[in-house]
Amino acid sequence: MNTHRLWISFYTMLRKDVVRMFRIWVQTFLPSVITSSLYFLVFGTVLGSRIGEMQGVDYMTFVVPGLVMLAIVTTSYANTSFTFFSSKFFARNIEEILVSPTPPWLMIAGFVAGGVVRGVITGALVLLVSLFFTGLSLSIHSLFIILGFAILTCLVFALAGLVNGIYAKTIDGINIVPTFVLTPLVYLGGIFYSVESLPSWWQAITFSNPLFYLINGFRYGFLGFSDVSLSLALTILMAMVAALIAINWYLIRTGLGLKQ
Image 1: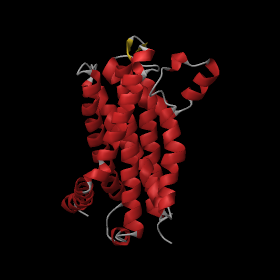
Image 2: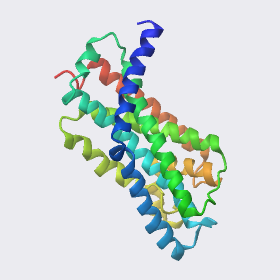
Image 3: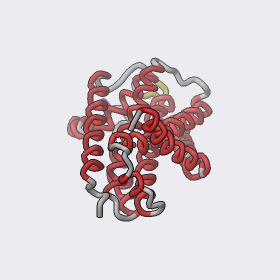
Image 4: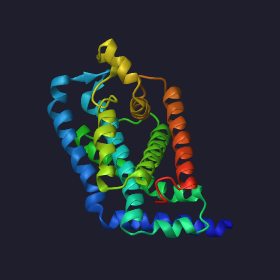
């Protein structure tokens, strides 16, 4: 395929997904905004007044980056996994893409791009909502780091969602991973607390959680401090991107989970 046809193929897949998510915005964007608002209300406003400060900043301000990251992780993952799954079993247009001259990397880019778009938009909406709870006092240490970690995190979990979408045989297969894997990892990744406040044995468990590094890198962009090195967080993030791209390319190239 020449460059023009590659672009048309990518644009078609992305446009279809973006149009869908805006057409059903009540399902794609609103739930994360409402859920995050409840988190801000309960953990920030109610409990935050009792906790006081965390690492020298107001507790409400401390939890905002983590809650934004929670929305980014869950929505980017859910978007790609469901979109690919529905293409296999509902719309049944995945066969048309597979028999076309579309290369595997372009299929990956087309499906993952929608997850990145939804994750970034949802994260931005949650961040806007947080301003009402922080009194417009949320600081930004580095906009470049915030955008970089947000986009790369969307990419990681959109790629992970694609793996899930390829392997899933039922709609329950789509919901198992977010419920039993992603949610515990995110909640235990330092959204509501600093690792310094944990006992040593729990710190060791936390340091083995990859989402802990993503959340802390994102928090550094806002507050200018982190529980881990920024370079280490970025290295882990890039390693996850590379590994997931390779896995998806292999699965689509060989047809595992696709050719029944």
